[in-house]
Length: 267
Image (cartoon, rainbow, N blue to C red; front, side, top):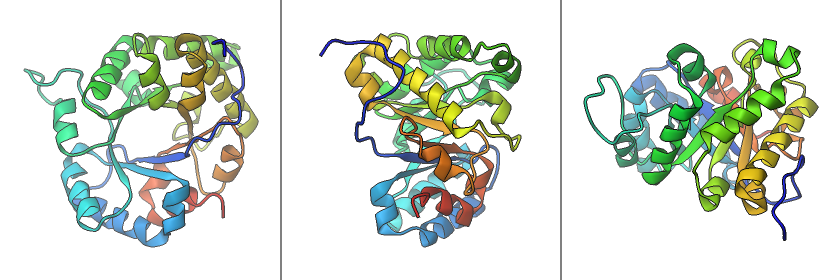
């Protein structure tokens, strides 16, 4: 098969991934309680159908890891960010080696809040993604346009540039195994959500860009989430878009029952 860019993905089996990004919320005791409650509301078949991930603050990672391992809870552990160096004089940072030691499976790279508030560029996100992969973890690479960019008709220009810059130099095999999260900045924490068909179209565009840089196999394999005010009320419509492979959930992931309902969107 000839590698080719494309706008929409073919029917390929990709296990959906629902990840809760807790941001700067919950101490370690609250984190333990949330995971326990979420697990109580989930069934074995839910875990079979969807990969579930939680991304607590750094201070809660060890506590959540111990709980997940001790109680054999089939939830994957993720971190919200990391530095690209393994160690060094980087006060306040956390290295990928530290996260790997805590058995984190995923690390978010380039969340819009990191880009907007802390000045992370595509180059920085790219360095993070590469080191996350090098340490045996999977990056969740975030991309998305601002409201003024969307209104100017520049969504594909902006998102395409972010995808190409953030994934530069990553091998075809690695590209197929990562996760990309499309997060329109104007929809994060605002209560506004992209129309499902619009979100699906942009995710399809992102898949096409991955195909351009990594080939058809990578485009078929990469899982692309939607993030931006995802709730238990809108997740089913979002997930009905065949291009969308999951959700990166913010505020709703801080409520165990709501998060469980999002994971159980098929019900």
